[in-house]
Length: 99
Image 1 (tube, rainbow, N blue to C red):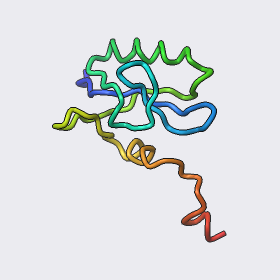
Image 2: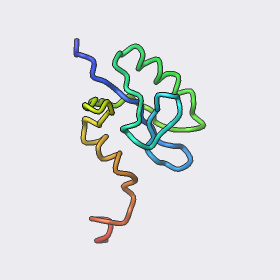
Image 3: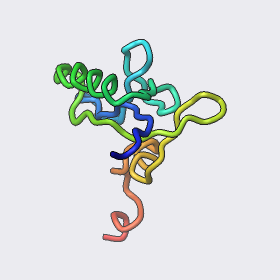
Image 4: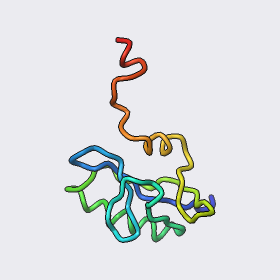
């Protein structure tokens, strides 16, 4: 069995499309470093199930791996999550600008 890695809950705001994260107080934040960190699989799964009922707020909720830094704040582990913290990728740049 694979060792559980700390997780945060991430999703996209339904109205604005922004990436959002579940905070400790149950609200949503746009900052990964303010996300609630889950250190047990059962608790993370329960929280995700509860969040998935809020379909009028967000879409596509899932658990993302996180690393807790010395300052106690979570940081993204995988490239996808680091990329998502940078904001929308639909701006006119790169290959989009060349066409």
